[in-house]
Amino acid sequence: MAPLKGFQELGEPESWDMAVGSVRGYRWWNLYMYFTSRGSAYDRYTGVSLRDSSWDYSQWVPNFSRSNVQGMHGGSWDLRTLHPADPWHKAKCARNVSAWVGRDPLRPPTHDAPDPECGCGFWAYWDSLNPGEFCCMPYIRHEPDYGYTVQVPLGGVIEGAGRTIIGERGFRSERAKITNLYMEDSMPTMFEEQPPDYLKEQYLDSANLGSAVALSYNISGGPMPTCMTTAALLSQRMQVPEEEITRTFRDAVSSALGYGFTWHWSLDGLMRETVPDERYAPYGRKSS
Amino acid sequence: MVKGGKYGVYAGDIGKTKRKIEIIPERELEPSEAPVQEPAIEPAAEPVPAAEPVPA
Image (cartoon, rainbow over all chains, first blue to last red; front, side, top):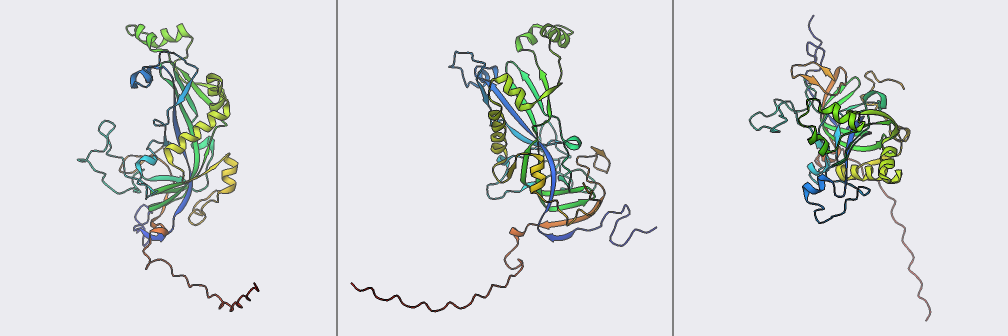
């Protein structure tokens, strides 16, 4: 049977329409945040506290310059990669991007983002912001010589423009701008404890490095579920009020993304104050 | 994650493609392309009576 006029054989539209404005959708990110202690191996490596002879592990310093916000499937959303006069993040297909050399000029993207046959472009869903469905687990890793690595999920709203593929559940667009954001800090976090470096060196020859270190220090060797939120667990370990931790997370998001969006205190607040885009959403939009 | 397509693995699954649109943000339209809005006609301002001289 011949395809309908204006549609390809698989039922996809043949050509690109033109429109003015933007589309709006919900999606998730991850904040990656680092805390180092004064006198840690990381500071010695970077020369930050060579002059500091005291080893005070009670003073934890957030490392804002290393903090960054990434999409759930990778890809950096960083203010520092944007032009000051142009607030739009622009997608390029990363199919030919190598983990070792980055973007290879000899292997440029084979198509503009997004493409119906590829997964590139900034994706967002019409009305779904369900922490149980698309959101990564919050996660803390403690390496005694380096500090804490923290991953906190962020939910929010983006505006999409440029080449845009309208799908049943959401869209993928060439350009995106974050307009609303909230931090999902009510979920219990995963926690991973690493052995100190000298123990790793001590057991370097051991064929059974992981379990030997783990047994001697009663360390699980992998991320374990906890019953505390990220801020509560860090607050307990760093002896810092929980509000300070939460505020530090927000500062890290601001330093990575800039200030062009609205913060919300909860998922309910965000869903109440943002309206799902109904112009294209009727394609299979769920009533929640 | 959804597998498919000739380019490999999909990242965000948005379902079946329904439309493909090239969307131009409103702020980037050239002045001639922007929708013309009729200027509101304001009523003529009534003449303001001159202030009376204040006796010294």
